[in-house]
Structures are given as C-alpha cells and as structure tokens.
Image 1 (cartoon, one colour):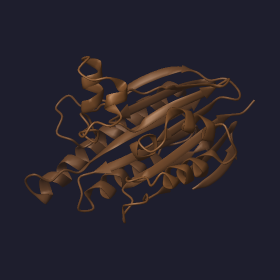
Image 2 (tube, rainbow, N blue to C red):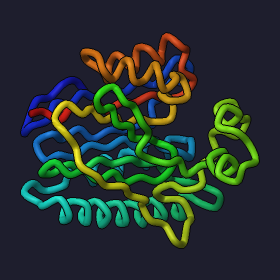
Image 3 (cartoon, rainbow, N blue to C red):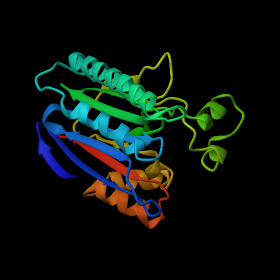
Image 4 (cartoon, rainbow, N blue to C red):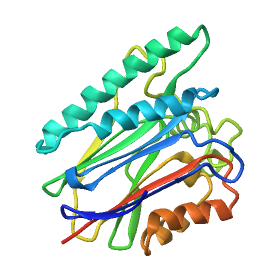
Length: 242
C-alpha cells in the first residue's frame, strides 16, 4: 500500500477491513513498473474469501515484465483461468456447499492503450478532464434487474439483495470468462479500481472528488470509513503521466 511513481504512471493503493468487519478478504495488486493493477474481493466466508482473493493477487503478482499489451491481456486471462480451476478444486476438497470465489477487476496499460477485465461487482472508473464515468458493468442481480427495467438505478443502490453477484472467479460457472473493455488513455487521466464496499459507501460525486485530489486511494478509504463502511474497502488509483 502507498504511492509509487514508475514507468510513466503514478499509482496509489489502500485497503481496509471497514468499519464493521474484523477480517479483510480483499486483496490488491499495484505494479506500475509493468502497467498492471487489480482488486479482488473474496467471497465464501470461513476464510475462503481471503484465500480466493489471495490466489488471484498472487497469480497476478507473478506476471512477467516485457509483454506487449495484447500479450499481457492474454496472460492475465490465462492466469485467471488457472486460478478459477484452482479455486474450484479447493472448494471440492473442502466439501459440499463450500464456495471459494472472488470478484476481480484488472487494469492493463501499455503504450497509451488500456484494457480492463473483470468478473463480479468490483469496479473500474475513469476520470478525464473533470468527467467521471464507470468503465465496468456489474455482474450482479440488481444490475440484471436494472437492465430488464424491473427496478431503477436509484432503487438498485438500496436493494436488499444488492450483495448478490452473478459471476465470480472460482464460482461454478461452466462458461466462465472475464468481460473486457479497451480504449486509449491520455496524460492526466486517473483510473480507479475498487471493491464494492467503496462504491456502496460513497456516491459517484464523492468518489470523483476524492479521486481528483492528493493521495486518492487513502482519501477514498478514509471517506468510506467516515460513512461507516459495512464491508471491506479497497482502492487502487492510477494517474497517466505526461
């Protein structure tokens, strides 16, 4: 955790158990040297969530340097697929009904090109020229209901089943795959990866304001804790340098 200025990037990362939970089952990756960042939010309880997010963080920490953008994205997919299988095997070993799974959001940046890959409801945002937008789209029950027109986005923010995700690394999903979005980055852009504990504690306006300031990752976590965040909270912020 902290701040790093390496390879044309400035990045900040911070994670906390939150105001209500004793254990932190989030994990993060902050590797500006190779243009790779990630946040994982473990699920399953009984320490399985911490195991799952830790498996993902470890596999991405092992990513080699020197890969092109496309090769790096392919390597992320390969490593996450392997982690998915490992988690499934561990769940089977632990017994019927046990889940070892985690959400994941990954950011790869090379040569002014980015790709964001994700599963679940951990998010990526982009702040550019004062304009703030969400890059990812949650794999969640409430997002499915919003897409179907059954509830509004405002209703989704307070839905009683807001914690139900529809895709995760390690979950029993025969067609598991990471979704992805790609684009270009400009000098001065700031990107944010976070677990859902952050965006469920702060509004978009509050997130954007903290992301634009100094030490944004720690500032975002502090703001979430001031709102008595009920879940683990993790933020990884990245600035594209000139």
